[in-house]
Length: 284
Image 1 (cartoon, one colour):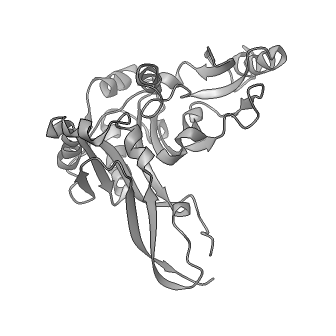
Image 2 (cartoon, one colour):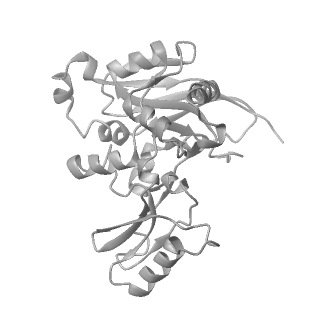
């Protein structure tokens, strides 16, 4: 079996939502931004899945590791003007650990999609055209439906039942997104789009610690490996313009008709989904 030259590149993008929002996306390009804090709150109420209590983690350590707590707090909370990592810290205790987060990051508008990276597909070991397949796991669909049973989904109104949006041209989606956000007053430098990286928070045991060392607000692109099957890319609005933030909080924005670059599959894919693609491999 061969190896992809760029395993983290992706060729397919999906967004799981409800049927009514999927229709609005295709018809008008309607998207709604949420905040990491809203996903933390959701986790408290419904458990991890759609929500994640660890959103925005800069670093964590055991609550009895006084030396490490001092070191991490000094790193991120130092008032020294020469320290580029200075953060308005939020300190939370969970499961015997102290988590450090940046209050600002948790309130930034964000929008998430599922990306099918090249690494999810087997890489052919010979040149030419090949048919390759990969699976989107059942956990992805179940997480975003709070692990509902199919019979529970069937009881929902049709507009509230799950639907999967497939975006066939993500570059064009980004172009339209930048244009719409620019009309609200944002600069391109205030629109951060990146792939989420996943780390095993339990790798060093309950007494272990981790410092992800991210510059604001890129800690929002760090998540626990428990969520790796969600394979996220995120749009993060890194701005201090309160009027724009309030506008994104208040209602969806519209990017324009998406029928040329998006399709919708309606239904609860609680057993997962298989994706087939044709790729052409070239010899070096």
